[in-house]
Image (cartoon, rainbow, N blue to C red; front, side, top):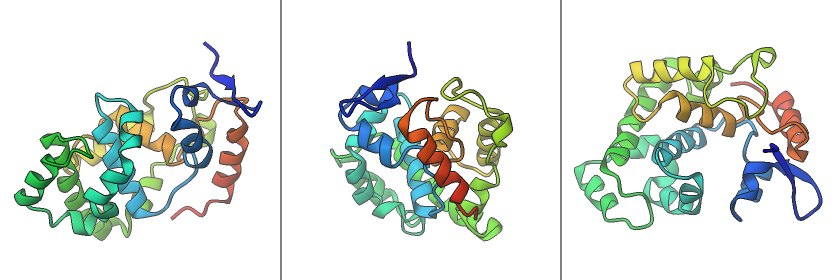
Length: 201
């Protein structure tokens, strides 16, 4: 199957964004564009963990609910959550009510605080794992990479949960650490331009 399709505006885009009405805007404005904001990085890692075993559409349609439930993924606030907060979130129909994943976000918020103390920022740590452009696989040909395996392994060593290599690779794609827009996709050049202009933390 082709990695691209012709959208309603007559322009070529990554084929995956044709599968749900929520995807084109996310694909055009967010996916693959570099992010240095600690809270946005933590949000995406958390949402990728929630996606495990589910579709990204399920998570994307609930994203605003997740943001409300987890205080815009301010990990300093989430780190102070207690069992009472877990019980509250398990009653929140607007999110995925999975105890293990909810507890993982709270755990990971505490680990993020530790990481910031050690590395200066979550962004500095994450971007230190950016793959070399010359070694990147052909766009959309992989679900893991040497870098996603290494980052996953290091996060787990630091006590993070729900951060397997596939989850971490999807995170790296979305946050612009790699440009995985298909060759021919109208957004690929825009994402590459943003990556070149991006100031690494």
